[in-house]
Image 1 (cartoon, rainbow, N blue to C red):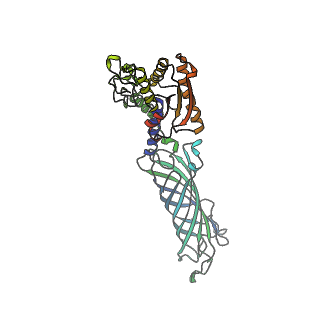
Image 2 (cartoon, rainbow, N blue to C red):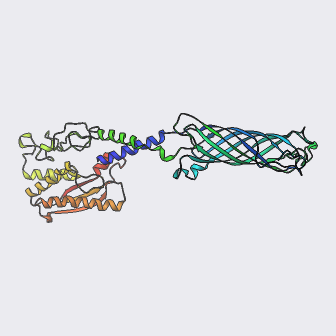
Amino acid sequence: MKKLILSTIIAGTLAFGAHAQEFDKFSLEVGGGFNKPMAPLSPNFLSPTLNLGHIEVGARYMFNEKFGMKLDYGFGSMKEAGNDEANTGSFDTKYYRLNLQAVANMGRIMNFESFTRSFGLLGHAGGGIGNVKPQENLYSDYTDDVYNFILGVSPQLKLGKSVALVGDISAIINGRQTVTWDGSTAIGRADQGFYGINSTWFTGTIGVQFYLGKNEEHADWFIAADKYATKEELATQISGIKDMLKDSDGDGVPDYLDKEPNTPAGARVNSSGMTLDSDGDGTPDHMDECPFLPGPASTNGCPVEEVKEQLDFFRKAINDGYVNVYYAFDSSKPLGYSTSAANYVSNFLKKNPGVSVEIKGYADELGPEDYNMKLSERRAKAIYDIIVASGVDASRLSYKGYGEDTSVDKSSADARQMARRASFEVK
């Protein structure tokens, strides 16, 4: 019983700890690096592979450990590949973009925690608006308003509780861009608002993420397994539970449930730890030589009626279900305090040789029905063996398992305890 109570309390404590712990959801991001226009550029206009000149800032909110949203703003400029204008045309184009994006924490989705707690990976995709404005060449006075789509990945390196180093590679498609990146050619007819093909470009940055909040971890690094108690916390909780489960009077009921904490040694008690007086004659069962037959204290709790009257009273007490042996969950070993019922049946059979008894085993409704049927039979057999071992002829006894007792409330622990029993029927 103590083990069952201990495991239940520990499970409840850990479940509460799991729900009580949270993670931070907000972060701010800033980074800088390069850009690279892929198309369109006019003939003889080239851009370097690493065109330094891109800055971006953003704010992110994570709904949970795996998914979130971010709003970010990026701006910069693109220039020619070199200073040799004889081989490549000069250009200088300013731009900005504003995007709302969905974010997926690939590190949690792909279980990076199985091999690292310091490296992460975010994926992001979304859309927004932008502006492209050449500073040189034919369309230097033209402002090109565009919409765009963006897709990228962001590797992360955790530096501490509130900060991480982050890189990012993003591919961007500008919709309805009218002039080339160099500003020398119109893709469509800018003067009439005719827009040509889409434009493609890349950005690459390195920067930092700042996590906002008071929790131990941000969603980027929060691991579900970390919701459970540490070894030190668990040791403290178990120590407290063990103290609570002390049984000072040794009656099988822990102190925190015991309403009679000073029960005499050997006394039969109920589930609340109170001394039983089954026949209500004022003599407790452990002092009553006839615990199921009321009688005065002068005869040690036994009645003074004739044996015939005792037999009738015993048969009525048995058939009304007042004499039972009880068992722990999933056990066929009788609980110590209830074995006196078997001893009493043995004594009565010895005094009344014309009487036979059937022993009936029962189980609660927890577990498979077939298993409970076999368990109930083992329980009845255990009492059969005890009474036969006490000297009663086996021919006067029979036993049978009746399976689950469905007459009690299976949601009640006390009711289930009453169902786990062996009863007797006088024949």
